[in-house]
Amino acid sequence: MAVEAAVPRAPYACDPATSRGRLYPEPVSPTRSAFRRDCDRIIHATAFRRLAYKTQVFVFHEGDHFRTRLTHTLEVNQIARSLARALALDEDLCEALALAHDLGHPPFGHAGERALDRCLDACGGFDHNAQSLRVVTALERRYTDFDGLNLTWETLEGLVKHNGPLMLRDGAPTERYRARGVPQAILSYAERQDLELWSFASAEAQIAALADDIAYDAHDIDDGLRAGLFTLDDLSQISLIDEILRHIRAAHPQLESPRLIHELIRRLITHMIEDVILETGRRLQRLAAQSADDVRHCASSVVAFSPAMAAADHAIKGFLYPRMYRQARVMRIMNDAEQVIIDLFSRYDCDPGAMPAEWATGGECSDRLSRVRRIADFIAGMTDRYALVEHARLFDSTPELR
Image (cartoon, rainbow, N blue to C red):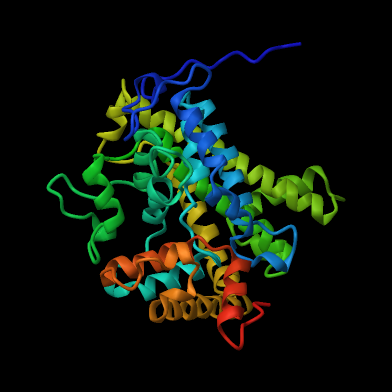
C-alpha cells in the first residue's frame, strides 16, 4: 500500500517548533506540535460544540441538510487544509484558524450580529472577530491555571488579523475601523500579548480567510438551490457558473438535477482552490519570502484569487445578496430574529438577575460598559434554540422564525 510522503514545509510557513509561544507557558507536548494542540483545544471547547445549533443562513429547524455554523466551519477547514498542503504551509495552524474563526458569532447568523451591534452602539459596537478572541482568551473556562484556551501567538494573531492589519504603524486604525476604532477586546488583549496589529497575518491565516470565502460561495449556492430561492438557469448568468454547467451537461446530458448540483459545487470549489494556489504561488515567488515574517511584513496579502477569479467571486456574491441574503422570506425571519436578540438584551440590561447566576453576579455593581459587555458575552454564546427558549421564558410572545 502506498504511503503519502510528508510535504516539506516552505520557508515562509509558520513552524510550530519556533512558535512565539503561549501567554501562560506550558510544557511542550511529546506527541503533538504546538499548533496541533491548538486544534484539539478548539475542537473540545464548549463554544465549538454550540456552532452545531447556530444559524448560517437558514435557522436550524428549517431542514436537516442546510448548513449550520458548524458544518460551514468544517467545510472551511477542509478547504484550508487542501490549500495549506498544496502551498507547503502548516496544515495544523490553518486548521486551528479555520475551526476558531466563527466561535464569536452570536445566534441567528449575521442577523444576531447586527442586533448586538445596535445594542452596543454607544459602547463601540459588536465585532464577531473580537468576540472570537474573547472566547478563546477569557470566556472558555476549562483549565486550572488560566481562563481561555491559552492558544499560541500564531493562532491568536491569525484569528484577529486574517482579514488584514487592524492598525497602521503609527497606531491609527485602518479604514475598516476608522469610524469606531479597533474593538476594545482586541486592544485590551494586545496590551497583555502584542499581536502586532499593524502587520498582515501569516500565510496560514490568509489561507483560512480565503477558504471562508470559497466555502461561503459554494455552500450558499447549494443551500439556495435546495431552498428554491433560485434555479440553475438563474445561476447561468454568472459566467464561471455557466461555463461549469455547460461542461457538465456536455459530458453528462442526462444527469439528474441533484447530481448536477453536486457536480457544479464540487467543480466550483476545485476551480477556486486551484486558482488560489496558482495566484498565491506567483505572489510568493515575486516576494521571494524566506520566513513567515516576510509574509507578515509584505505591503499586501500574498494569498489571493487571480483578478479573473476575484471578479467571479464578486459576481457570485452579487447574485446571492438579493436572491438569498436579502430575499423577502429570509429577511422576514431574520428581522424577527434580530428582535429576539434586542428583546433579550433589553431585559437583561434592566434586570441582570434574569440571567443565570454565574452571569448575573456583579452585574448591578459593575460599570455600564462592563455590564453590557457581560450581557453581550452571554447572548453571543447562545445557540438559536436557547435564545428562543430564553425569549419564551421572559416574554409573552415569541416569533416562530418560519
